[in-house]
Amino acid sequence: MSEVAIQDLYPAALAHCYGCGRDNPHGHHVKTYWRQNAGLARFTPLPHHLSFPGFVYGGLIASLVDCHAIGTAAAERVAAAGGDFALGVVPRYVTGSLSVKFLKPTPIGVELELEARVREAGERKSIVEVKVLAAGAVTATGEVVAVRMPESMRTARQAT
Amino acid sequence: MSEVAIQDLYPAALAHCYGCGRDNPHGHHVKTYWRQNAGLARFTPLPHHLSFPGFVYGGLIASLVDCHAIGTAAAERVAAAGGDFALGVVPRYVTGSLSVKFLKPTPIGVELELEARVREAGERKSIVEVKVLAAGAVTATGEVVAVRMPESMRTARQAT
Image (cartoon, rainbow over all chains, first blue to last red; front, side, top):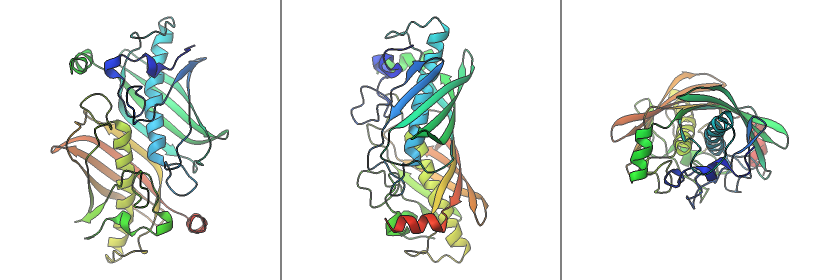
């Protein structure tokens, strides 16, 4: 179980993501917590995050699914290795593909819950399934192929 | 050929979308133009729309794909009916599903081009394929199932 959000354990050079980076002052700051083999996140959309009056914008939902799945992929690897959740040891994943099914309109004005589970985990990539719930009802589901960031890319980014 | 953006022809009651609504002052304002059987859009991400330093956030790319595909689905129907692009006659679609494949990192700091084509068009839904290009190279592809907004939902929203 992680006491802190996975995104708060990413290396500082890789913590600028608009969706979840703690060092992006303009971003959404998605926070993923690892609980009983699942990634959990909560997010309350802002009033302007709408598609039509009363409903949440699908692109925002896709963004939440994306970052939460990537965080869950990382968390699952830490848990599988013994559960030492600490700064610097959380692996960094990038999004290979992202798909979202919108089952029903998601009401705005309530806190959303996201549950993510790793369906397949490998050395190079993991496949993560996500449910988005509003007031207890699943309004969207997502699937993300999370690809382990190549060490070369990680090193290159840290040098910038 | 549309001289104005499709999103600027949506009914006023349905023009608040965070991704593309002209009446959302906080949004991305995606603009889709219809040219030779394709929807075209251009968008320059802001400096904070990043995933890692130097690269565009995937959730933003998903958002651009979403709104541009929805606009293209509407434009194709107008073109198929004779091409009378005018305020109030553009049909409104919602997103049934959205999928994006990230083929390579998308560099930040350049204008992105999005090309969308309707692969299948029907009474109730259309399937739209989207390419995202940065400096001439395709960095991501997307597919959106665009569902015609039910008249009941449209009426309900206009009443709000």
